[in-house]
Structures are given as C-alpha cells and as structure tokens.
Image (tube, rainbow, N blue to C red):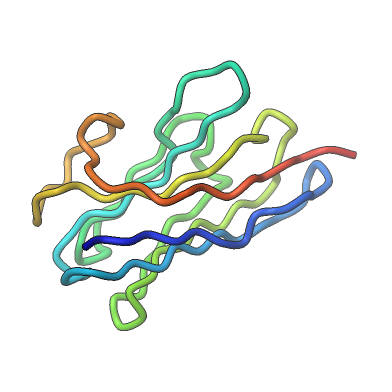
Length: 126
C-alpha cells in the first residue's frame, strides 16, 4: 500500500522560505515520478512541480519557476520542495503525489497521479 506523508508547512512572512518534505512507502520509490500540487480555498488543485524517478528531469509551473526547487533523495524515499521568495498567493494546502505506473515522466494533470498525501498547509502572510 502506497503511503505519502507531507511535512514542513507553516506560517511564513512574504519573502520567506519553507522546505516541504514528503516521505513515501509501500513500493520502490526510485521507479516513480513524484509531483507537488497545491489547492487554495475556492480554487482547483493546481500543478506545482514534478521530478522524474532518477531525479534528472524537473518541471515547474510558470508561477513558481525560479522560486521553488523540487528534489528527491531515493535513499531516504523522500521528495522535497524548497520554496523561496514566498508570496501571499502561494498560500494553499500542498500535496505530494505519485502516479500508479513506474517510469512515466511527462505528467502534470492531477488525474494522472494515483496516490496522494494528506497535504500540509502553507500560509504566507505578514
């Protein structure tokens, strides 16, 4: 059974930084793309970033490009999202997710991800 557990959310001032973590279990972590999504109140869940199973290829939403960095440690079965220069519009619940099939990389729609964590709240406010 695949389980994803996010951590690292919190309250931060505009311009600040946070690092989210997502610990995975239940299958061979290093064979699967990992993604981060977010959902703000009253809005649809949106893609933030993804990283390929090897960690070589990353892809970002335009809204976070240059500010957020996704990375993974396959030895620790963990994916990270380093968020810098945070803005109030980054406020949302952040979810990590992974597809049902291995070695698939070109995916950014929520429907393409089979497993989801419970989410962690990020609030950017002064």
